[in-house]
Length: 636
Image (cartoon, rainbow, N blue to C red; front, side, top):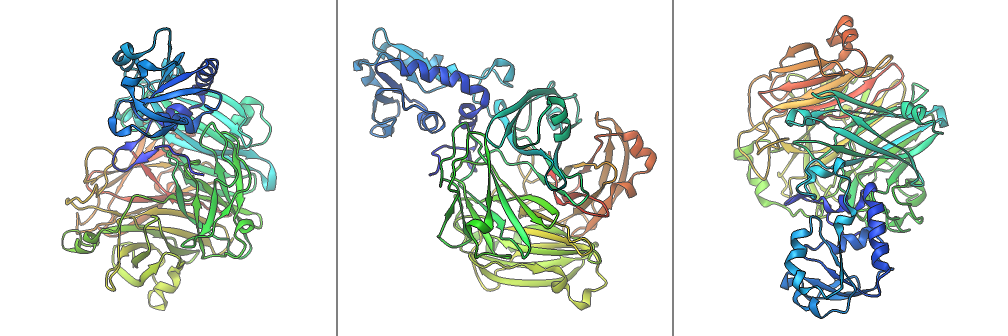
């Protein structure tokens, strides 16, 4: 049972309406508005902007007695809304309604346009009754400005089970770099049942300063018992970005609990993919976080083997803003790694996390949005003369003496029936050392490639570098520009692992095609780098692997600067180095910056990776003798 709401379009961008109606602070006003309407014997609904469907999906209008529905656009006449067939708004004057609900924010002008059509004595109610307080708005003049709803959700827990699990969100006040003067975070913590445990605000220090929210500190601050749930985040006073990006570390009282992932992607989607089936000895749990103030009905969220139609449904209701779990093996007992799973989420949840447990070790990663709007693009196979490699999906090869590196291509669009791809491995200087054509992988075909096997004996001396997944049309095939893969890394000594996944892009070419090479701000091409690297505290060191992918030959070497910042944004030290075009470099913070520099940087320090000559792709993680974590970095 999918929600009929607009969340995000690759054509029009983000939708603020569902965030406005589903915001926790909008709920009291919305409840009062509905109660007022429910007290009327008959209510007319005027829907000039097409908002009524989203309102009906995200609230309970069952007690309101609607006597008619009216629209402005003649092409919308005859549609079914709130149990009524829509009529032209010019017919409103003949209604017997005692109240008119105008489905619009900033509705004064719209109400004025139909004032002469409103029956005498009829009360007018608008969605402005559910507005957030003015102190929560970045742009008070345009309520549905996406900047007013820079919101996100974060999986958050602090418990004492199996050695203890804690979470730590780290981000930066990157809005300051786009002109924001005063930015505030509003936060509400929910437990698994959707009960609000705590609510608070944090004023961000001006400048590109670090932001840290640690579950242990939150628990101490509010005197909370162990919890598992999510935080609703709202950034007020932002500029440049309406998305809250963050890195999320999971760590334990035991050194064997360690993983990292990143922002949840604040737009609920119909499908997600890239969920791995459990390997031998593993338990895989999908965390289902309800993104809305209404329950998720039983059997509205389900999972199926990729490329197969049979769906196993979660047979339990999830409360508003609640959190539930799906044990993959319980619903799909016949599947095992490298099988992969599709999540049918019905726009109820944002990009969910999954947790893998093997004995006493756990790791968390996320699935990705599976696009429903793509079609095969025949031009991609013809772009080689202009774009060389074309779409590139790069990932690190961790030191082979210690780690196994595994690549699994993953379908990430509902229309992808095949993936014509190949893997190419490079040493740190960008020299090709191995190539593995994978053919035209069928949608239901799950392949996991061990980099060790791909490199073979001839490349035993290659200990690190990177691998690129590229399209391969040698045997034909269709492509849509949305190639994805899951990358898995296993410590040979401890057995600890890390998963990360991402999609391919065109990199470092001045030519553009359908928004590629992507740019974080402004129009493509994106040909510069600004990546955020959070730093761990003792006993954890920070690991970073930077890759310089190039679809066509670009500058022979990068001009990369690593800038160490104190938590308040003060610049402490910097290091410059060059990465060969098509190559990669890995570093650890303790080997890069001196003890004195790290001491001056203090707690909550961070590094900005800056390069004005090329676009780099980066992976980061925390590392100790017992465990490690790895995920891709975010830029701003």
